[in-house]
Length: 222
Image 1 (cartoon, rainbow, N blue to C red):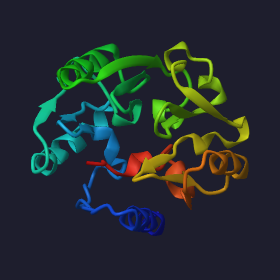
Image 2: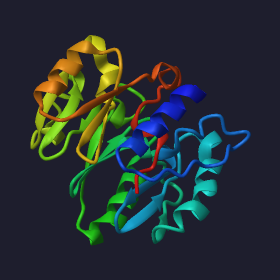
Image 3: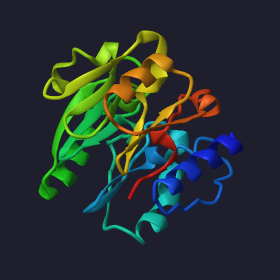
């Protein structure tokens, strides 16, 4: 896991990002899925209220870090929301309603983002841990989606690249600075992505997947 995490950080650096690696949080074994504790846009950072009570201390720990970079807002009870359920595609924000994110969380987040010009749309998540387990943004009007999400009416305004059912973990891919990071080991999806014209970099994510994690989970992009 440490080796795969280091390779992930190196890939981000190679794409021109500056990396800040946070200190470990003893007692919070999911803390390396740092994306779940906040939603960050250029105008604002919203500190989440994770759906798993055991993870809420992770949100407290991210506050002083994000305060150096953004104005902060914070979701409040009865809201629950994981950042893994929030997909930002330009000015459209898809918020998955899942076992971790409830209606109150979606409503509070939408209300905080709306004054900054973001339009939010909820999407029911009946399968998979988070929305971004099944849907990623490839830039423009294109989404990478699992077959189960291909017919969701909330996503119809976007063009879809549909991932083969045998390769669903590849749905969690990450577009950064014009390059697409995608998990290694999914050749059918790789061929589809090559046809999109985007530069593609594959990363080994076998260890994060043991805990339902993926490419987007392990960083907050500012």
